[in-house]
Image (cartoon, rainbow, N blue to C red):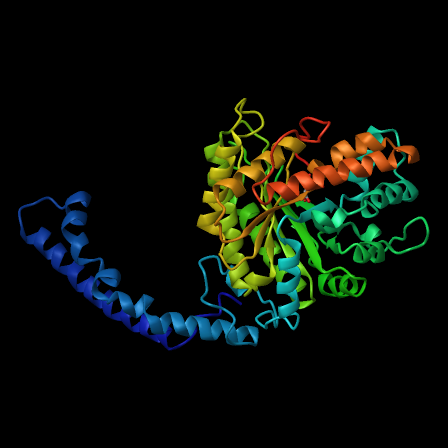
Length: 461
Ligand code: 13P
């Protein structure tokens, strides 16, 4: 399809110029040979080439540049490409890879849920509030439960999650929670659907919609999948009460060349397609291009790579005409690689993270909900606090969507025992308040966490 573009009038012009230039080239070549033949110079390959070359580079020198690269030519390319896809007004211009020709039928339309998306996004990042990310896959939550000797069975997964949703006054600092599909359709022990408990507590349900990662050609790199059937699933999730969604793209830094262009572009495009499909079905997409902190690199490299990944993601989002006001970004904070032996102060983390985002993220996006990415609960809170303290006038809300950094101490406190539920809930409330305060730049004093580093190499959610 891509190769068929350009079969138009401009191609005939190319043919004419080709003919003219080949005549000129041949005349010039004959002249040069005569000069060599009638002069006393031996016609070496080198001397011939040197004398002939300036006269025989006809295509580029003779033909005016704008014949090949001018506005008409580009417009024709675009019109042909659009026609070949059966719609118009979508493709801004064909890019060098042809990737912007990927057909995304009808995705240029504005979402019928546009106003609602904006309201939902604003509510998720309301002052002093953030997201509880408890959308671990069954396999990952199994690893957590195993730490406290609890079997990975539906009953226990339900008990664990119910503990959060029934925490008194949870919504003072938690606006919303991301759920795994099982939880979205699950009932509490007394038969009440979890979504009803959440709604009654003024907590917005969200849903993880990616289906996991596929390995790419570069060792250890992945592209996140889940586009097939996503529109239908999104509509079903909306009907069940979900109002936002999450998709995690994972990039890693490796001196052997990761992240590769394939991984950056592939994940960016998948995030954009997911984002657009969710918006069309009423779900605010949380766009999560996570650059892992695994590696021996310094903070500068983490920042540089993260900026490149974010910029590619924004380009892909723009290509699908995302409604910026109806999405949220969930990036990694910028820290030195975990194997670098270096640490960074909250101020350093804040400066690198926010300054990087200022270069990549449109101000129209209402909020940033950071992942914790393996930082300790305390580190994540203090780094978020520093961002809000140093950048009180940032164009977006700087908030949280923590998984490990909101659950680790709570899991330890619960220990799988009913008699510990209340104490665990109190701890969860205290942790969420600490982060709510940090999202206002007002956290100070002791941190309630009882665990240290939560880092896991090559983390799978
Ligand atoms: P962490 O805060 O544990 O990194 O998880 C957040 C998340 O949702 C990752 O997708």
